[in-house]
Structure formats: structure tokens, C-alpha cells
Length: 45
Image (cartoon, rainbow, N blue to C red; front, top):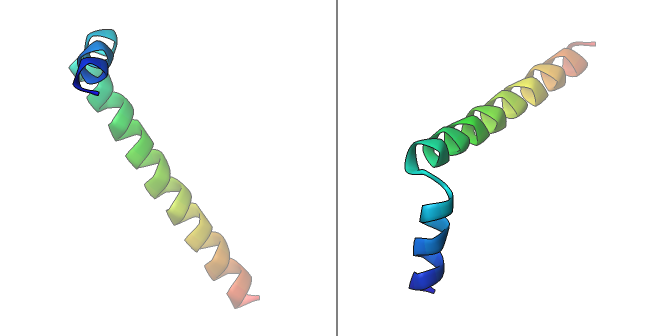
């Protein structure tokens, strides 16, 4: 397991990994916010 982890770390540079995680988090927040906005609009009708 540890050997696999070190291999993955070598394949994916740490900065790039952090950027990918950040983009995923931002995407999730944006998606949730969009869903909430649509739900608000639908409930007002």
C-alpha cells in the first residue's frame, strides 16, 4: 500500500495535486450553489 502511494506521488506532482483538489472543491461548491439558486427560483413560482 505504501509503495503504491509513493508511486502515485511521483506520477502526480504535489502542486498539481493541490490544484486539482481545489478545482474539485470549487466545482462542488459552485454546483451546490447553483442547485440552491434553482430550488429558490422554483419555490418562488
